[in-house]
Image (cartoon, rainbow, N blue to C red; front, top):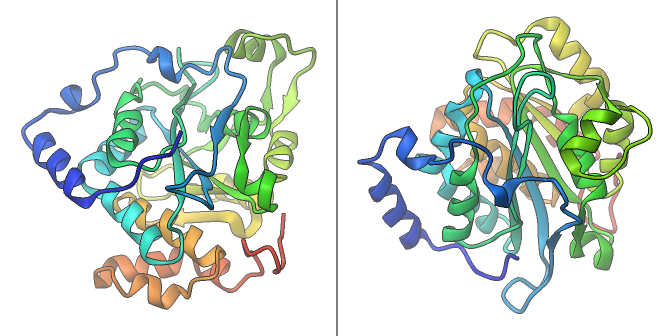
Amino acid sequence: MGNSSWSNDAYKHLRANYSTKSTAQVFGSRSIDKDMSPRGVAFRESRDSVTHPESLAIGVFLDETGSMGAIPEMLVRHKLGHLMNTLLAHGVPDAHVLFGGIGDQYADHSPLQVGQFEAGTDELNQWLTKIFLEGGGGGQSMESYALAWLFFARHTSIDCFEKRNQKGFLFTIGDEGVHKMLEKDFLSNLLGYQFYEDIPAEQLLAEAQRMYHVFHLHVTETGTGTSGIIHDWRKLLQERLILVEDYNNIAEIIASTVAVVMGADLKKVVAAFDTTTAQQVSNALVQINNGVITGKQSGIVSL
């Protein structure tokens, strides 16, 4: 996957087409799409190609529960171009982006949905709009973000790491805390093979961090961004917890994070954004910009 390329003209055409469609028409899935089911998947692969000789794997898992369902729609209708163009403009020409969905393991029918690593406009749009917006959630102020860590740790194969020892990126997005344990029976049923013990979320995070820079974007504007939830996330991820004031800026935050970790200057990255967006992105990334995280092989790599 990931052999095609981004086209602004193609995205303009898609946006124009979506302008006359409802949310239900854009996101047509009424249950999990069979192509996004994690059951029985050995690996999702990001491979180098003639078109993308130095691929960089980037996972973006969107909370598809009730409070967060507007974010996938915002990306499709307005911000997919901002994501890709910011990457392209700041030293990331070979990004392979995988879109997925995250829900609640206790309340949702489809708590994990996984697309493919892609680079082309039509393919990225295809997987993003295949996400089933279940609109559930368990009312416990927690979601199953650790499912993304598990899948990326154990079910992805990426050339950037395997060939060049360069970590990929994994972003989860939501407004809740993370369930601290994934039960063996649930995992066996979800993924289609036997698990013999429950797995702590903290263990899965550590596994994912072997191959990926793992970040969580915590959306504070929905009213669930309590100090307790933020404290727990900060304990897990330290500077890799990113607080989001306005979810409309998520595409810019993701792309800017990748660009800065890969060596770009944050001030130059945000210079292309409007004043409000530039300030909010700068605020969100202040700890990353001042830290020691880098994606360059010769630099410091912090887990």
